[in-house]
Image (cartoon, rainbow, N blue to C red; front, top):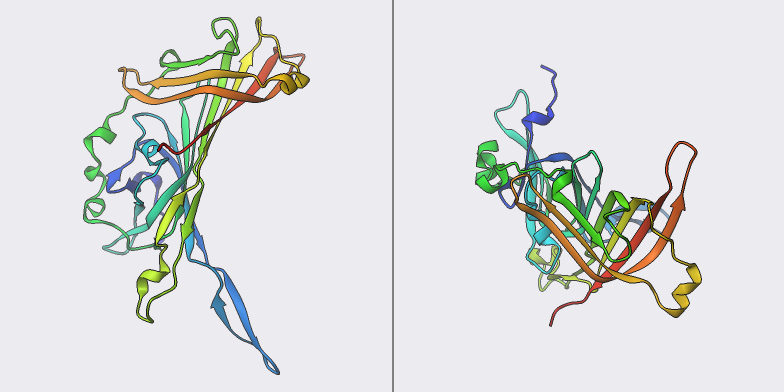
Length: 289
């Protein structure tokens, strides 16, 4: 019987906990090979020419507290898997990963829409089928109670403040915020021919400083743009705060950028629209000692 695995028959888990609001998932891996050639014959075989690594990306609608945000700093690796029904078999299909590290977290929101979140993950362990844990094999009912609770935000529970503009008169219509967490895997030579641990990195370092980028789009009322050459005498800095709560008051996400640097500003207008300005701020986070 030919059929398909539909979206409502799929579940996604991180560290054994089911996630809500998932819109799309993409997991991939690739093997880097180098051909072996010999004199007088040509190509005879291939050899591995790099570590075995993969990647995962998850797009979600923010409808409850996002546990993935806690994975942006120094932390242990985590696992994830998507399970799906396979017709004609008693087994559940899966595509998952072990030893994943979050490399990018981005949030975007605009008027009339729920906030969306995208997380990018670098995988330094195994990736593919058969990576279900016991709790994940139990099905959708194994999701934790904290993730089952749905508390989406609305326009009245999303607050953005910025020192560079008067948000009471200049209307912010969209925001985006991204945290880049670059990782560097460290590998070591095998101690013996049977040392299977050498295929995995001995450690994965988080590269500092972390870079945060925030972009605001606003409709102009009394805002006045800056001058490019004013940067030579002092860059514009300000405090940017993004606070998103659920309908019931649950604190979903909170970003507080103190002394963020405004690096780009663009003005646009059209005959069938209003004057708008896009502002981009950057903030760097050093490792706490």
